[in-house]
Image (cartoon, rainbow, N blue to C red; front, side, top):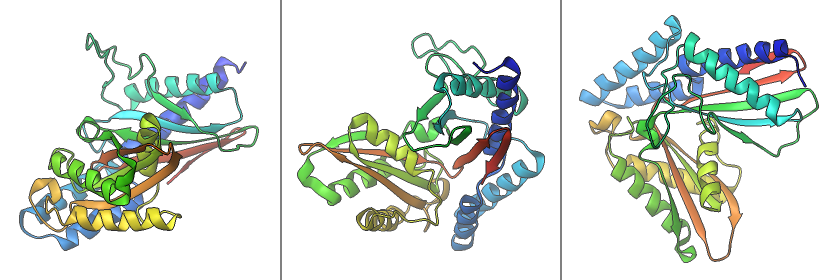
Length: 289
């Protein structure tokens, strides 16, 4: 059992990673927004100017770039006791809620009661992943998911004979139905295969991959390219004002599935793709961008 001092020290480091997550957009996402600004005109260009200025202001003032600081999702690889890592994460979230600050978003789904700490039953959401990790090393990726994006995401069970064309059609329909609500330009995470809940996990995991990195699998990479092109042809544009850029990227992760199933999940992400990675090796802590 680790000491309370160990837990508090690590919790402060998690809180610092959350501060970076909420106040400093990853470079690849910011470059994508800058590219969108160069491509657009009229009202869409004015919207993009405001977004890019917002990103700069948040970084310089070290304040959250969006009032909705989101639901926090952690993807963790470790050889430590998982219960201790969860304790560190929970304490780090509680500290960050006060210090960053994070908006208190987590409520009881039945009573809507908010305890003000971004904690509660099964929150924050922590996925422990099966990748090997050296003893004494802990690594994690963190996403902040705002409600505007989460509320227009979804999971679907397709007929397996629909194949890649069916996957593409359901993603395009999800983006079309979302319209301006998720604050485009968006990033589209797509999870294919596994089971209903696993495809949703994969769709969120897809958002962790940088925008300049295509999928290693050639079929997934081809699907990403086709989706991005067709989503941008929808013409929704920045914040729904129309234009050439509805999405900055499409990312696909996949798993094998039952022969009679084709699960597909679509995780729509607003322009503020807030992700950060952090790791510990012994007592050394690093935030990775």
